[in-house]
Image (cartoon, rainbow, N blue to C red; front, side, top):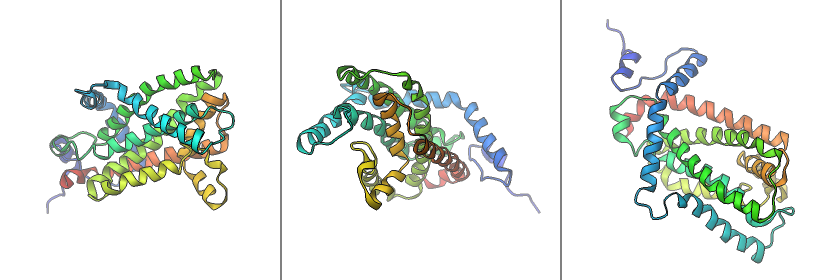
Length: 287
């Protein structure tokens, strides 16, 4: 009677094997160790994706600024002239830009991560590496765009006389929470794109609806009733409100909503990463 296929052999040949019955702690430790071992590959993929995204582009990195700026101008016309919106004394253009700036990091990450596996069939089928590096790199490229677009935010705050306070030191915490939630969903979306071909047809619709169900362009807390309570459950709302609190209002985020969003974010990240890691041995078969 022969033994079954050895997981280690499968990995060494370039095909990751299914998860074994080892403890969850050991599994997570292995996942973290693999990321450390392949950090140079992650860095190379980020550089490659940045180069490909802006290669032969007339505006180059200016596209990272152009999209949220154009959206801000359009919505500013709508919500200051057509349907005036009360934002609690904050000039609407900078209020909208903060929402769009942070939302675009989330949306762009999911868009690029969604196709990160299917767009790299040679890597997925012929070389072993932790496959989560592909959606991770997509999120890091979007984070670079986020950093570039922050320059316009600084100019808008200067133009409207909004002073930077001590609360800006909390920004890294908010970014980490948003990245945890974003990466968790990016892992799920990338798998969904691979396993179910019809996901790509509904993804953009879901993302558009989600944007208007989040405090990107208006304060959802002013929507009453059942709908208002449902919208406030959305983890992205306290995250975006947190950016506005520390940047525009000079205060820390409200503790309860932001803590709840952070808990959901890190739980989403951990569960999604484990599910992704356990399913990656099937990826080569699906491409």
